[in-house]
Length: 345
Ligand code: SAM
Image (cartoon, rainbow, N blue to C red):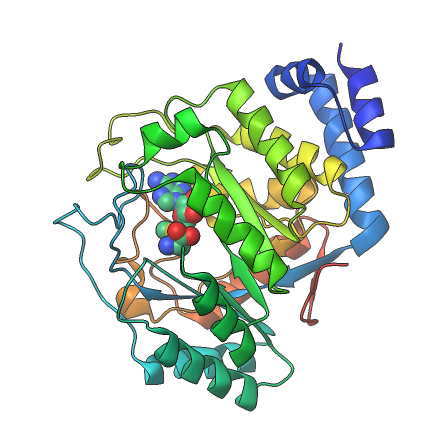
């Protein structure tokens, strides 16, 4: 039914709002097949069969924010909090380097312990020891000056999902003190400062409509990020959204395919959340246009504590086991791990 629309998206990279709505909501098997085929063709045209690895180091589960969906929100008194020391972070990088990682992603809740001075020192040390590696940060909203200093210290990339581009939905997912305006401002600041920027959103978050998702697509067209991280929303038992439904595999895959056709050269991760809602979620993501995976490099002792949502996978394994498991999954899906840094084209 929507095959003409898929052809149009494949050829032009864009659709009208009503066409996007039809495509996002279709459950026609032939449509989904065609979208998947074109998404894979497009990723292979630019990236071949390469899959880039990003070693994820979850540096802190302390967070000053209180996002309603997130397991490490400030009000979750049951969350076990930890932060990694500089030595622990460096040892994750050393371990990761030996395993072949050439990008380290330092992610955490918004934790004031990680001041600019502290982060700049770590970034300097990582870049000095591993000059062929990219440093990616994902530490939430900070000031322009802070982003500037971190960039100057050597950070290459920054991941900050916009979460939703709809003001009214943003309000339903976040407390009053947070604002979509500031989140967007941060993203434009990061881009202006020369970072490779990653934005993105959750699929199937409570109250989200197809129209909201179309707003996300339009915002991404405006921002033009280098990377787009989307994954299903998964409820966490100690949050206000504990009893809500999570996002589905089908809708997430459909959106990945749409994003690949809209942004042919973008870096598109097949996320841990996708692997959590389906045992073959990450493989299916790779077959639908994804070209990045982010295995966990955090020490096993803290992994369960960085619990953003329930039943998160890969929390019991050593980094080396994760690396082997992912390599097998990537091969089984018909792709190959690239040992490059994996910058956006
Ligand atoms: N504090 C940083 C920030 O705000 O960007 C990075 C950490 S934050 C926990 C990383 C991402 O986790 C968020 O951008 C959000 O999209 C995702 N996330 C949080 N709770 C989730 C949930 N319940 N299900 C799926 N993803 C979730």
